[in-house]
Amino acid sequence: MSAENLTIKEEHCEAAPKSMRFSLTWILISVAIGIAIYLIPTPDGLSERGHKYLALLIPVVILWTVEALPIGVTAIGAGACIALFQIQTPANAWLPFANKSVVFVFMIIMMGVVISQTTLPQRILNGVIKVGGRNTTKLSFTLCMAATLLSMWTHDAAITIILLYSLVPLFTRMGITPGTSNNLSKHFLLVVPLGAACGGGGTFVGSGRSPAAAEMFFASTGYQIGFTEYALYCIIPSIVYGIGTWIALMLVMPPKLKELPDEAMAGRLDAMTKNEKWIGYFLALTIAMYCVSDFTKIDVSVIGAFFIVVCMSLNLVDWKKCIVEFPWNPMMVFGAGFALGIAMLDTGAGKWIAEQAFVLVDGYSWPVVSFGVGWISAIITSFMANAAATALLVPVVVPMADLAGVPTFPIALTVPLATTFVLLIIGCPPTLIAYGLGYFTQIEAFKVLLVRTIICLTLACLMQSLWWPIAGMPGNIDMMQTPAKLTPFHYELIQNP
Picture (cartoon, rainbow, N blue to C red):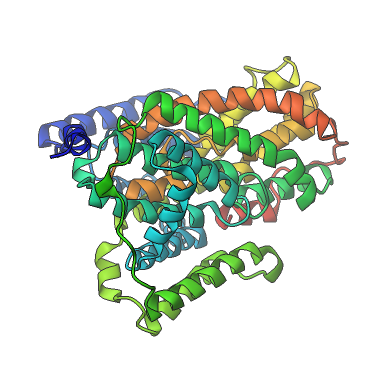
């Protein structure tokens, strides 16, 4: 056995299943904490429904974090409890599980499952290795920046799924599976989605949170942020955040293997089959349709469905195999994340949290306020989709910034960038997609996400203080006479970001 292979084997760590005692202990702890929060007198400004919501949210987050139960089981329980405790009506509690953004994530993951049945992922990875080399540090940086830059021009979830399914065969050849995952596999399966999430906030194309921020700022001030203007302010910071993300991963979870071994490399690939070529054509067309979806007005969930239906109708892949290989667990979590996010809005709990936290930075200069708003955004988006969090927060922070006497434009634009830095994997599709592959736990991801948030929000203050003035960003935008707080469009955006 080669030294490289021995190193790999030594890094393997079997994932021990959770014992019944462990699960029951954490369930009881979570329930006790929820009851204790509910028994506290309802704070001023928080509705009774909002109080019950927070009493439910904390136990759910604890159970998700420690994984006392499969996260899909906790997700279904969260939806049931939202209805049981009358936080929402049963219809409103379950409707988010079929939200079009949840359907979009379903389509994106299924696209990855389809692509994994071809040699396309290996061909993509071979191209990346040609650029980054076999040195794991250089390859990691190359993948991170590739994901960041590519996701600015198509959806971050699409880039995530393509690059992730390119990496999985490499680990398989090295004998690394979800059950024997090590620092190498965990590092690479986190660097891709986190890099893609950074790029997703760089333009209106990369994610829903960017156009959501522009629309909410227009609703609050009457000032319309255009595509080019937004890109001018956000592309450079997004690239810097990608670098900060890579630094965080190298600090918390560096790959112990210095160079990919020979057995990780694929041999010479045969010519693409006819079916693979057709899948490649349809994939390219799908990505192109994602890029122009703002102009065509075809919803991204419909575009993904087009790819799946065509591939299955033409028998380009095995449908039954796709169903078996699909990771269903994360879909339940994403649905529950939307249910919790909409409940956070409807009960007023999200606005109450933002208002309480804003007091901590009131009276400081705008970079300090921006740093505080960044943390508020990161925390709230950890429990809901980042597009929904952006739509919720921008109408809250703009009038608050105006009243505090700090520039409204920089504070508002902080939100879509800061909602990149989720603290839990449910906060954005890329991290949830990666988690669904089973190579890392939520606790492991949280350690990386926390350090990443600290580093990137610090970089955000620096970039906003230096780059935004150079780019000519205006400071205060005259507020509308009656700023919008919750428009019909706002509610629709939360429902369908």
